[in-house]
Image 1 (cartoon, each protein chain N blue to C red):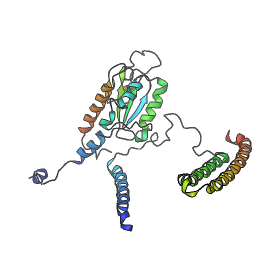
Image 2 (cartoon, chains in turn orange, green):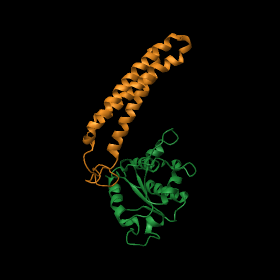
Image 3 (tube, each protein chain N blue to C red):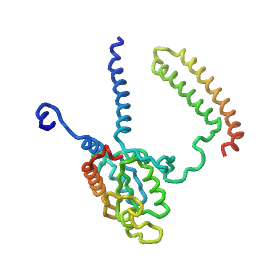
Image 4 (cartoon, one colour):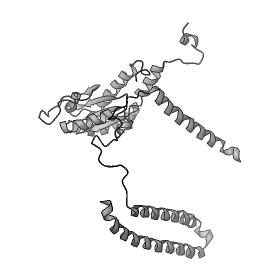
Length: 125
Length: 161
């Protein structure tokens, strides 16, 4: 059983070794002429302005969290939809309850977010 | 008896490190498309399926100088833009090559005025000039092949640091 995964292990090994070999090769054989301009951040040839690590409003993370929640919802609902005929009509209500709970959560977070966005607007600039 | 004679017809191949690095460099020329004017449209055709720069290993247009080998300056260049181009050129890792595509990039072309640099070779070490207004994509392919020939004839690339 476990021997069936041996090719995958070999593949991983080859991938790791190749990656290391290429990095070392370019390090050993390639020319390195660093200069002040070359080491500067790339901004399409313009002067870089400000800090790259700016602070973002927490609301963006809320949106990201919502995305993950609904991503998971798809993971639950897809297998159910595929096997719907075997599972029967009874499971329909179970899934509807699941979606209702998520929708309530969505409404809650949307309301909260709209407030958050208003509060944090001056911080974003 | 030299080594290549000794291993002749035994299933082995001898080569020099120079040949190998030159071969690798010449066949993976990633362009930095510096499309400034209408020549850039022809440059797109050069990368597109009909003229197909990927036959020469150059289909990977890199919009970052960190990953590119050959800069294609396509179009007329103003003095204001020249500073940005020079900085991008400086940010490209060695070894690097440059193509001045079209009459404007090569000589200023019809833009004979105070705002336009009369040829990008005023501030860039240009390897190949392509004539035309704009040049056909085949002309750009030819320029690329000339750079490949140039790369393949380089010596002691490994010690060139």
